[in-house]
Image 1 (cartoon, rainbow, N blue to C red):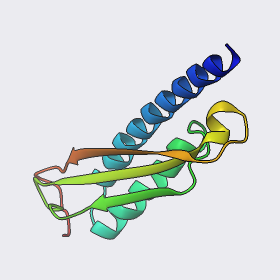
Image 2 (tube, one colour):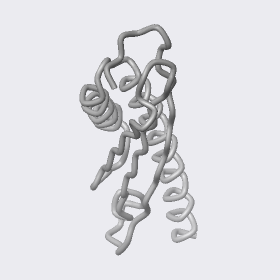
Image 3 (tube, one colour):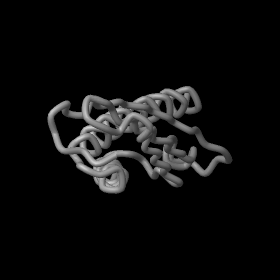
Image 4 (cartoon, rainbow, N blue to C red):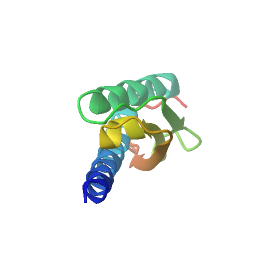
Length: 118
């Protein structure tokens, strides 16, 4: 019964972490879409993702943020993909080998009439 309870808690925490990573990807894409240059968009996405996950996700190490700027221009969009590795120690509270990777991608449109420098 204890093992089953630990597995249920681990599954619950992993699903909560996945929701956090999806929310962080959306937040990062939104932050990147408000910038005028590609460099600023990449920096804003990274900062927003780290800030969003700092208080919520369970030990995302390493945290990888990839900003897709291929369509960065007026009327285009920006895509942010976040990958988070969570160890099993953070999920079930018992030292166990392994972990799980969670990946989320979000896209945000860029304003058609803003002064964006590609």
